[in-house]
Length: 430
Image (cartoon, rainbow, N blue to C red; front, side):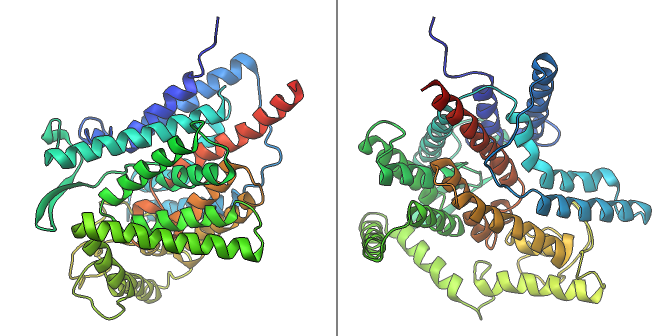
């Protein structure tokens, strides 16, 4: 009897995807359950891993993978010490601090996922398929002009006027793994090692996921996705000077063609992207929340606040999202006044963990990118591209670098570890 390629690990990946994407944006699970749904999925993962451990007494030995965990452990240590001090000084309860600290520990989900039995390539293909499905659902809602299910429990969204059209835009993390799946598919096409067996199918999958990123209308997200794709494209191998120049010319031509097509067929989106580029380059205009001036000012205000409170090195602690502490009372847009800054991940990390904590966190991403880049496996290169893409996206939003990002890194790291074991076993059988 033929064994199914989908198993418990596949089921958990589906749960993780639905939890992080709020069921493709259709259902906001936080309105139905206390906390976040992915917390329950993480708990289920470790329960299953523990049961497997006691049943088989198996221990996964990580070999040939150089991934640095100590920077993240350092930030967690800073956060825990600060949380204890905040508890003793009655600034915030430890349970509220734990809700923030747990986000730093999400990366260790890999430990539970490694104990499960699965083929990593099958799970990657499953993740790509769900990214495609999520784009189709999102596009359907845009075509229908709003939620296609119960609006009262739908993920948060707004209507925007774009090119004279009233368009539904939902703030949900879909496609969820775009910083990984787009580089992965791109590497597959370049190497002719196709995920879906033919170049046409892989290119179709890549274009659909990229279309989903464009339809989200998030300029920061689009920039980080393009950056991660280019990083993967130029890290596929060590090209000669001529080959490198040829790749650069291809990228330039592709950008010109895509922008030209958008100008002709989707002028509203084209104008939005152009205004986004202008905003990024604008260092003086503070009248619009998207300008680089506002994002930079958010960091400056927090830097000065920490200096005034003698907390520049380690920050003021892991204050929760609901903390009433005001950092920037003069914030024009009322989004960055508190400890949590939704528009700049670095501003949030800086005020919570200080210069040392923020530097450790960023170093963990950068160092592990170079570690992963040494291995030419598609999985490793795509995960490395996700790390650098997340760092770029952090300038325009907290979610790009915090919250669910470390869950994705942990899950994909588990696939990398499993790939090493799978490759060794496959070679031994050959």
